[in-house]
Image 1 (spheres, rainbow, N blue to C red):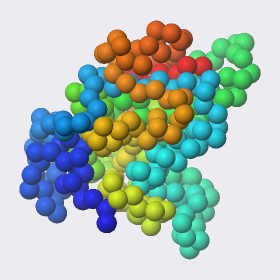
Image 2 (image 1 turned 90 degrees about the horizontal axis):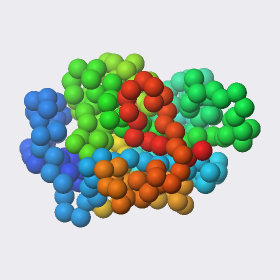
Image 3 (image 1 turned 180 degrees about the vertical axis):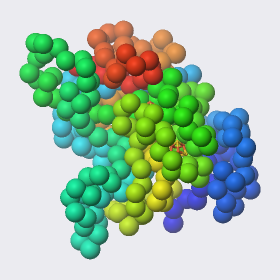
Length: 270
Ligand code: SF4
Ligand code: SF4
């Protein structure tokens, strides 16, 4: 049996939200209270500012697919393109339009639009880049959300509270990275095998990567990092001894649309 929302909040470090029962948090909590009540659980991974480095030199397409599959499996992300049951088959254009994505790949020009270099190496130009929510330090999605369903933790992770989400999609319009997906249909029948450690969602809410906040709370690395065989590094940007800082010191890195000023916390070694 899957965990309920209350259990999820507890293991994600929001452990003092007692008495949620069957109701949504939005009905019970004043905006801002969720952030105020975050208490890290013993044994959890903690940082002042979480950041990720993706080493594209080590990330081949097969590994990228494994990372995305690991992420989508442990977060019950539905698959509209290859549904678990033939009866659920959707027209391909509908399946692609409704697809939910937390972690996926894009070509160089879609990943770094406007960063065209006249004599870019052919290898980089044809590379598939792993993309996800950048957990921007200055996130426009958080600013535009009218209900605080999307909010930023002190450690920089941009979270989603599905029970507060009213599906207005302002955050999707505000995110310049296309990192958010909207549930246009009930996603549950399209989840291949429900993973008991994470809640499923319902129609009408937005979702995205949370840097595996629920795994960090259990002392585990994000699922994609674990599956990446060293191609993805995760750590504390504020800790100069962290591996993330070591990589940033050692390698030349780029970020997506840095000129927009959202301050993405995902760095790419190309
Ligand atoms: S990538 Fe998009 S969804 Fe993620 S924090 Fe930045 S603006 Fe928000
Ligand atoms: S769709 Fe949900 S998370 Fe996005 S802005 Fe609206 S209420 Fe906030």
